[in-house]
Length: 486
View 1 (cartoon, rainbow, N blue to C red):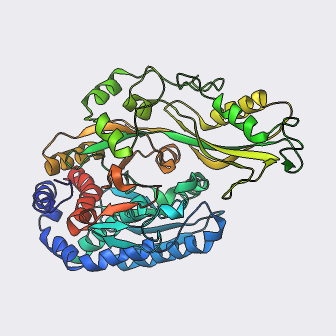
View 2: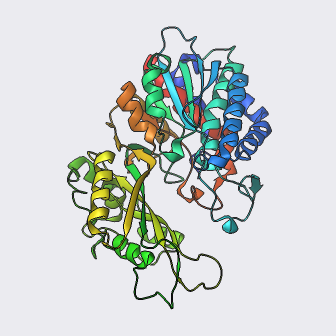
């Protein structure tokens, strides 16, 4: 059974009724969601069809179009003081509802920017012509994060419409357009708008579940850095017969440099890379042991022959609590069909590192730059630059009001105790909110691991977008605070 199937309906009504008198009559809101199911499906399609790729400058107008679409949608949902806030690049969209006197305020976060679609030839449908095929929405951003961010908007609308314009808590919604490029302007925005964004609790509509029938809550995410390295050895490409073997081939040199960053045990050799990495503690070991991970099944689903990673650690330990260094792009020379016999003049690689609690992204960038310049061949000119994607790792305690209440809801829905885990991915806003506003943010989304986020054919199961799933999102957005008030 999917964690957000039709059976959630009765469970959530019961939970709401027990937890909060203001939501004892939840049926009208559920009826509203059912009545508008087709509209909400079309809204997801319409938003996905806007190619809001934050990393490509040619999509700047599409970013603004998506922000404008969301500005309108927040207003129609019943939020007030709705506005688009410009940054140096991609804007944020904000709206609020603050009429629950004496009640706490919850800040809900999501992001509307998406990843590039390359390689386009691997898509089965056009990435920005969203389709519903065999019970799955297909398109870039359906799962990450356009489907997720629409759910709390639609849930707030349903509650306001069905309860005479009332909510049990005060709500602020903040939608970012830079998450996929590391949120470079987000910290400055938080610092300059602390009063606007002041809240008691924060929840993220960006996130997901690992299993169909087992609820989980993340208590940590890895941070990240991204850099680009270019080696140039010639002023222009040269004939490989006339000059080959007598000048340095930059692709060969770059490949050797990159290979040397990881040893035969998959241990990163960059000097100082592990200096601040903490040992795995007893609580994390308990969470690792309790996590129902089927490695063989995952390998089969990924088309991978064997698990690979840092020697001395399990797959989950590597993902949750160990840093990484990955070459995510490399190019140089002739890249077309066929052969062109040259010695290229330069070669470039893009490197992404995921970092863990206690590591600092600036320290890692400096270590990478030092390593590259020390180990690059003398015959090459080195260019090293950061790519803007820089985020601190995030950790939060298990025992918070929102986590405890969210855990209770998930247990009611799935019939199993909620598990805690650490997410290998990165949401820069999580650590930034904690640093700038002093708020821990609980992730509560309903995507699944096979949604192919960041990859061709991104999908989202239709069941994940039906009215019960939207109400499930409302449960996480509003119930924990309501439970606290009660």
